[in-house]
Length: 195
Image (tube, rainbow, N blue to C red; front, top):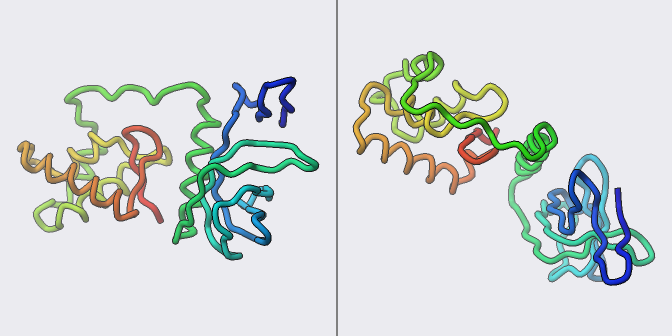
């Protein structure tokens, strides 16, 4: 629900709390004269104030302010062209997680407790895989829809060898896979494979 600002108050979207900025991710379906229309699969949003003119079909990540001047639109502050349409699925998953638990943080992980699922995920000997493949296999095995815990993934990837060097190697593999776009953090400490 859009709320027009009164006096000097800015316009916002009213959710649980007022949202003065929005993060949008979708495909450009129309682009002309410094304006565009972004479609995220649930609806389309007019964009104004673009720093460059994107091409039709570009996947765009936009941060902007909701405004109404003649028609409702998003006044763009930051925009970036993404090369992979799978990021739309990532954005939807994050939005769904926020809708499921507004204002709640994920439950804290118990220290030094290795659940049975982690032991099962570690059943593939890590020596037979490189660390990146072991991390991916562990995430796929442990993810039940809300992502896999980083500590559980590291424990499963290193297997029986709980040395600090193996754990550091697994954490570096997580960082490398995140930077490469193979995995992403659905919420702090919750990993998911981008498929």
